[in-house]
Image (cartoon, rainbow, N blue to C red; front, side, top):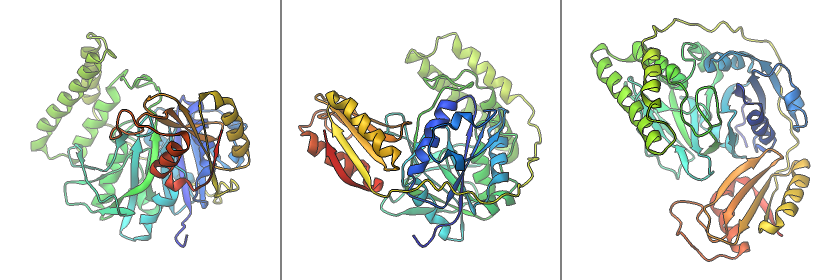
Length: 414
């Protein structure tokens, strides 16, 4: 690869050490090599990283405040790469993620880039390309998925909205606009950054090959089922965004749409049985309380740290291996996958039952990717409910469909 700038990958975590361990364990399999890892978390020391290969090369910065923008700014202050990338603690990037994500930065007009985000089952998309506007309202954007990336300039109102779990920025450009606005403690934080970069004259890019799997882990603000526990921070951030950018004559209309959309979301949770009827007005009350909070003017106080660039240096093995077998072979598959992972070999495990269950794929923190489901089942919503496959042919089909960028050169059938 001729274009390989230094990248600082920043991951922020709070109250989720197990999730952070999982994503940290996955990073040694990135095909891109010229990157360092900066973990900003509430862990008091590095002990949670024990046993994770190459973790001795990861910089850990303790930070115990419920403010994602401040945590990202702290990571940014320590970053030494020309590019800074961000991923969440409840996400795992595909092995080719950084390799694809940095390519748009060879274009000097582009200052930010982001990719697509898959959901819990590893197949469905949570987010693809989106535009946002001066009211903080999003619109889907159809892009040409045959291209490596698509550049999106600012049209004066709409701009590319990148997701905080899958985005990268030119470090100088991000520092040039003052980093993240720490008044956005949660929600609209990266949208605000994207807008300020657009207003500064920079383009953004959506990258087709840069994918992240996002799990929505439990937090103080939402349950493991993605049900909100409080909407205060969302309300406060929306108020701050409208105060900063929305024309006065459009504020009331934008506010009404915002509250209507949030209520519809809560009612949907109630219909699905994930919320009690009495919870809806209580949560809407927290939303109103947050929105009525007068936004504070906050500036980052983190000084740029002087330190050397510290690449992960995980000892790459570019040849990946696929292991496939039935449910009865689960133990043998796992043992073999762990052996290969300890040697730094990327591994994909296919564990298929003889039924038509829907598929799921995820990263096992022991060092390998797993896809489960029925050998006759669907791995995408466009598949038939039942298709006749042999184990070998189903494995080959899934490798060609979902793992082209993993670099699999060998398949072992159990």
